Image (cartoon, rainbow, N blue to C red):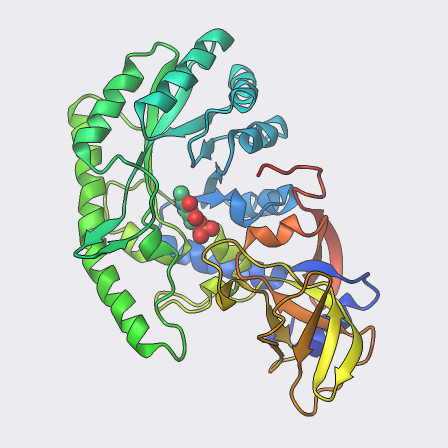
Length: 398
Ligand SMILES: Cc1ncc(COP(=O)(O)O)c(C=O)c1O
């Protein structure tokens, strides 16, 4: 591979591919894997499936060694489907009480797989207990600990779990142990405001400084909350198999909490644009998509077929796919990434003809896979294989 793959590299690699096409650069992916491993400092990493969404890629990553252990899934139906294909040690990171999905999980647990479901309240616990009892299985549960920080006038973090510390965690653990069809298996405390918020964005010096300041204040507080909650559960006799924490952007601070037994990461593999600018690490773009230039409506502008794949989250320019290669290209503010075609401003000296690829990167990691049936696997300057996405496997969980 060239040191930094450029437009000519990918144009050559993708020559002959039908466009639009999504791809994963395996060389960059493996370099990103090595970085994550080094940053984990010896803790195992649970692979976040929502940021991968391809069984073939999940298998490849898990096969690289013992550093990656288990999967963090986003729905019970997904976890049951993955379990049916041989994956094990699956943690569903978000609560769900969908009866069909829970029954599918119960069937896999009965068959010997470990699938742990997430809860943060008694109502979920009771619904899951009823189904587990009817299905004749004991389902393992994990408690989702809220890891946001409340500063005067500012909620720094996400709105997810109402479990805000040892007291509510102990109460929930007691509720879980009341049900013979359930057992408490672990705890997850995900500090999204540290792990998923860029703090070194070019041109935003003041905002970066504020975010870094808030992160510095939040980290000791939430680490202590997680540590104290785990200690309180242990003192009450709840032995946890795992304590999961962090995400791609927070390995360094998460592993400073000695109660954490494993980290979680997914975005650090493909490295989408929302993971470009962190002080703690620098990944390599390892996934993208190519659309075909179809016409040139004005000097300095080409229009491409497809491209309108915005990411979830607060609507804004940072959620749009970004023209990547050739370098210097940009979206047009009045059109953005279009439903069936996308105009792109190209810099002087860049000449693109109909049929040439325009390369984009997605803002988030796994959502790209909801737009494509397969990922072309690029290695050493050529397409060396294909990997079906969840969509290509006919799976859609949300
Ligand atoms: C519970 C949980 N853990 C970890 C992560 C980190 O995942 P990633 O590294 O893919 O950003 C996320 C992402 O949103 C998450 O929701």
